[in-house]
Length: 177
Image 1 (tube, rainbow, N blue to C red):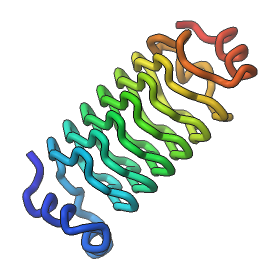
Image 2 (tube, rainbow, N blue to C red):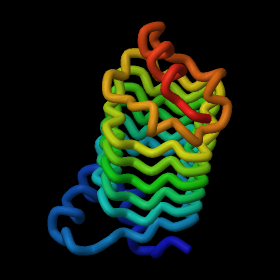
Image 3 (cartoon, one colour):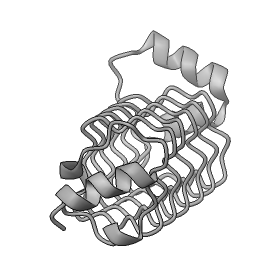
């Protein structure tokens, strides 16, 4: 369960939360299984937070810092993560159904077994992100320049994902799914 003090600080707003994060940079916030569905978390510093099994459905995480954050089994469906920093985030088994991740930095993010069906990743940075066993049905990878075939090798519904035409040919010819 989420640490009650951490949850109260989060609910106090972005200024209070980010100031607390600056004052105590070594504290790893515990927001496990927190009900944050529909919350406005734009600009929040959630770096290194533990948000495993949290409900972040329909949450507004515009330009939030989620780098090195544990989001295993979190529900981010219909969430707005546009411009967010998810470098090295751990999203195993996360639900990102119809999430908006455009312009997000997903460098080295782990999406193993995640549901990315109908997610929008246009213009995102995907350098070394891992999508093994993830469901990428109708996921929009348009205008993503750093996506290698190996990253999607084990993904499910690869043939139903959306890519730029040139990228589709390159990925399809070298992918082993």
